[in-house]
Amino acid sequence: MINIRHKLNDALLIHGGHIGYGTRPKERMKGYNKINLYLGLIKCKNLGIKKALLTAYDDNIGSVKTILDFDGVLKTR
Image (cartoon, rainbow, N blue to C red; front, side):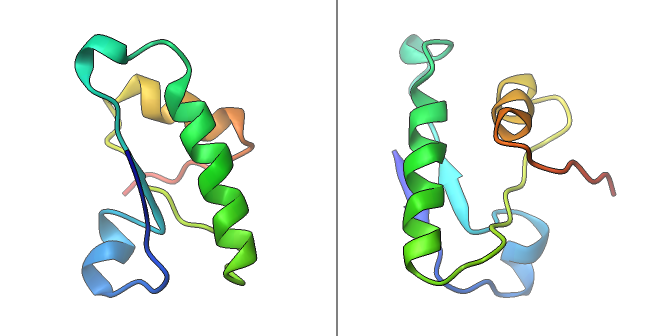
């Protein structure tokens, strides 16, 4: 599952970002979120989003790794 948010409100700037993706627990650790993120970034580019914001909890190692695999920049609050 993937969600593309064309515009961000105040809440999405803190938690959510432009792209949200998820995989059911049984299918995790199989690389599906990398595919989701890749396709999501293409869609964002086609929508004119030059810098896509993604958020993840610090303890969500899978999402953090996926973001880093696409040269994402991690910022902590």
